[in-house]
Length: 483
Image 1 (tube, rainbow, N blue to C red):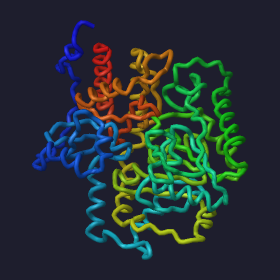
Image 2: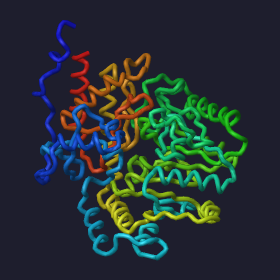
Image 3: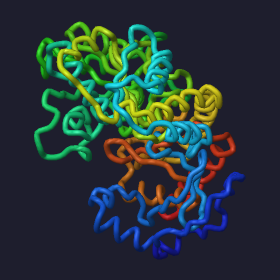
Image 4: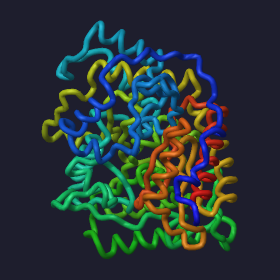
């Protein structure tokens, strides 16, 4: 290594060409970047500096569909969607129109009164659920929805203990923090009492896994000797859950929380029958089963509207947020009349839950998912993207795994394919920064921050996917040359 590192950085002349976009953003005339950073450092919570992802921050000014522009007028392809939240596209004209129309009539009242937007939305949302999931509680966020679900589960069952999977993320409120199983999101205080984690059935990084385990266009490269219709990895992971039930919780429990595909955990997928068998074990112990659809809901997995449908299960409760309002602060819990009845023993009230503007926005999102065919876009473009990413996995030693469903995709980076040790934080940052410098925004996740997360607005095209593939390939090439 005779050259200094900087001399090896290839000049940015051969950057892949971004697909065209007919939309022109307004010229930015606001505060300077230097002033924004001063305020961010002095007046915003220090946490905002901690989560400023990039060495060179991105100063976002405007968005339209899958595109974002910074204050200098530079365009980015947004493949992270504000953490899988912008479901149908930034500033989608129909969502904007619905919000404007509602704001002319009524911004806020309280659900002590009966107003049409709330009831129109509730009727529309429950039509997407199988029986008996027909009762809705509206909240303002996913953490709030999961907090409420914990409370309802405990009241309904009369039990206290709740089980979640390691690597899961279910929110950052003091209660939901206990459900969340990732050290980065924990604080050294008593939190989420009565929450127990069990081994995550991760067929790539976990002790067991093969080449047919998951419901994805791409499987792991691990060997598999299972007979047709048998998954030994699944049996082992279910054995781990049985051991947790035998050792770590009382004989009667309140609930089991599971994301159909782990989001913050890095798009982790379980063996095909895992949730089905887990639900059975939980229900035998008096617990209810809760599907956290905060990231997987609203057609993002492509094959189904809800992630749980891909596992062929019906939960007792479903929590959602993020894509529900295309970025408008909203969340919901959907449950059965029976569970809802046991919650009505006391009074629960949420001032902003079911706000008229939120309901109008969320209602338009459901219409657009249908009209724009976004679920099919998720399936088609997402499957294409994963199959092409798998070719890069076969080409590069540092791409360990590609997985997901629809537009909920994870690319797990490793030091090498034999050890499967996570790629270092510094190396991840280098690639991440390079991808951004070439005009694409993606996310990071995984217990060790080793997984790139691709969760775009569900309006991206095959051309956008090809552009990202070229950028990602180039960034890995650049990294390998530097290495």
